[in-house]
Image (cartoon, rainbow, N blue to C red; front, side, top):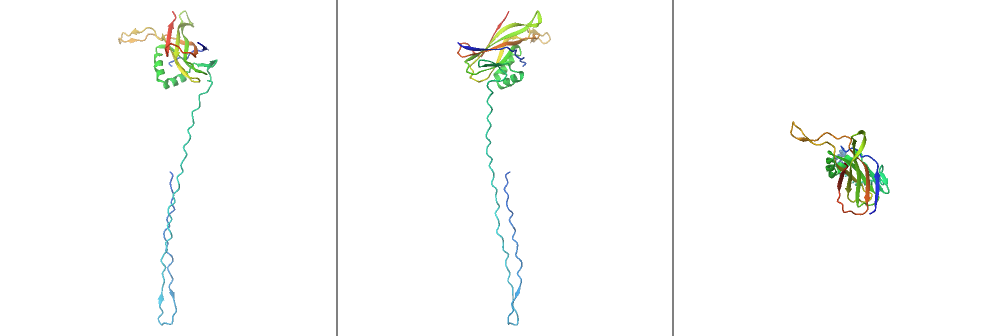
Length: 237
């Protein structure tokens, strides 16, 4: 079974982690000037007077002209840009990429996936880490190996290994990212104690200095009988 190994020599971050139409006004009819009486001379003794009156003429009424509404063309949606490839600021080795997410990146991926939020809740009491992985080709499953470190009781400036953690993740298509939470069984607090005032069990003192590091990501091209997702922790005593 062939596999490519990527060792990310980095320490994980803490997981507290109108259109209107115008109309031309209709002109009012204006009466023509009154006719002037005309006197015609005749041989009769009494001249007769005749007058001719012209009736006022109305100008034709103009119909309102409607302006055509302009139909706007529907804007063509701009497609989202494709993810950058190869990944930027990732540790890489032979087509495998890995990165420890920043706290901002981690919050983003947690809010996007409810399942991750449940895992992170476990990290309120246990030591955890996180890694983002991807590969140029399809991986049938991923194996993430890491180490849980603590403060050396004999020297506060040194770290000692408290346990080994194997995190298993399912298949991943080529050039696709996966956000993997590494959950150990190493407690972040001492043994629970009984509060004499309330009678309730409370967490013990905090165990400062515990972290998850030494992360390596393995992309397996062949299948496995192991169940995933899974976190398998082995304490070192």
